[in-house]
Length: 191
Image 1 (cartoon, rainbow, N blue to C red):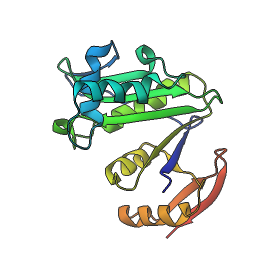
Image 2 (cartoon, rainbow, N blue to C red):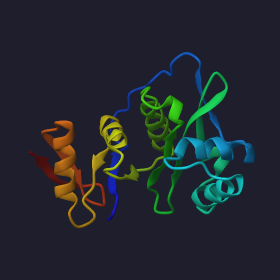
Image 3 (cartoon, rainbow, N blue to C red):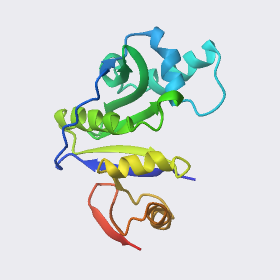
C-alpha cells in the first residue's frame, strides 16, 4: 500500500521557532554519527554495526541529491544527538523531508515540530516551490505533527481520499485541503 504523501507550500508563512534551552542543531560529521542516526529512526530491534552502516548508506549515501554534511541534521540536547532529519532537493526542484526520527527516550517531548520547522526554513531558503514527505497511518503521531506544521495531504494514488478522511476522523479534523501531485488544490476534504 502506498504511503501517505504530504506537501508544504513554501509560499506560506513560516513560524520562527526558538529551540528550548540546551538544544541546538548540528550537521552530520561522519561515520561516528551512523549509530545514533539509526537509533533515532529505528522502530524495531537494534541493528549490528554492519547493518547500521548499510542502512545509512542505503538511506542517505545512495541518494545522489543528498550531501550529508549539508542535508543531514541532528538535534542535540546538551551536546548529545537526540533526533535527526534530512532535507534535500530533487532534480525536479522539489524539496524533500526525509527520515525524521527521535531517539526513543526523547519521544513525546514535541521535538518533531523543530525538525519540521528547520526543514521548511532550509528548503524555503533554497527556493523550492514545495516540500514533500511520505509517511504511513501506522505513525499517527507523525501524521498529526506534519499536519500541525502546515503540510497538506496529496491525492496521488487510489484510495487516498478515503484514507485521509479516516485520518481526519482520528484527529477530529473537520476540513482539510487536499492537493494534487503538482501542489494545486485538488479538493476540500470534509467530514
